[in-house]
Image (cartoon, rainbow, N blue to C red):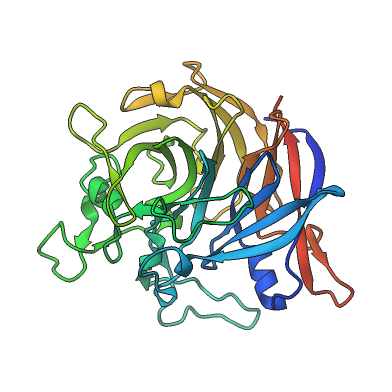
Amino acid sequence: MADLKKLESVKILCDLDLNAEIRADIIKNLSGAVLSHQGKYLWLGNDELNAIERFTRLENSPGVFGAHQRFYFKDFIDGFDEDKGEVDVEGLDYSDGYLWLVGSHSSKRKKVDVKPDKFKVEKKELIEVEREENRYLLARIPVNEAGKLEHSSPQTAWLKREGKSNSLIKALVTDEYLDLAQAIDSDDRGSLLGSEFYFHLPGKENGFDIEGLAVRGNRVAIGLRGPVLRGIAILLEIEVELGSSHELNLKTITDDSRQYKRHFLDLNGLGIRELCWEENGESLLVLAGPTMELDGSHSLFRLDNLFTLEDNSLSTRKNGQLNYLGDIPHGDRKDRAEGLTLNGDGKSIFVVYDSPTKKRLISDDLDTIVGAYADVFSIS
């Protein structure tokens, strides 16, 4: 295993009019990235906030993205309620004039609040598992040439949302590989299918967890951080069509009338953490990382001709369908590559990080966070 060659670091600078705490939340929890308009605009997702962040490459400083602007989900998703949790954005892509985004679709377990003077697990820690309605979002929003999201466009659309579920989850709930048959109706435990589903395993415990999105036209690749099955990761493929009232409908795409295909990837035991297309639009870059909350390799693979693969395809390095490109360095529970997008030259990738180290943060004279460094790595 070898690290990818780092070419340069790039500055991302937040709007200084934002509250310092908001700036810190944005920079410390980055979880998705995509460049659009020939690299002019950088779009970033966050797994803690209900907004998409857009930065513009400065004309006189090409190594700096500034002119920060925020776009709130409540402004373009009908019925979006910020009180129903964060979207937990885990994937972004830009295709044919649309910004696409996906939430994690995962449940979560209450963390232990680790402190130097704490020696006991408290009441709800490690017991309470919750699902947040806003995580069940897969949407597309038109972007105009000025880099603005077209909030009122009839082309703005998303998969049908139904409480703490959506049409994708309903299609997957009886899948024999994902084993969501452990899902039970949260109000009536005697029924498997219902208006809401409870996932037995939270996302960071090898449960169902989306991390990664790649779109071509109306065909969508969705990477799963978990579950990883005996060391094999899963990538889902769907195709959507525009329905009525801003609704995306899933099309039937398999011989047995399923609305999704499964593709199995041997990523050395790792789950999928991010996806992006290479310049040819045929080769898919797959960032792989640990499924659980632990340190481990963040490895980059290339998968060719995804949309020509049959349902239940198996891609490995041994059969030649996967190529290992190298690792992205990470710190000790810090500086984990979380979002990547193809850089403008087509021969490198632009990477942003979750849980950045202090060295990666950009601070002002008062030591408050104003931005962070992203990295560019060669893939040629």
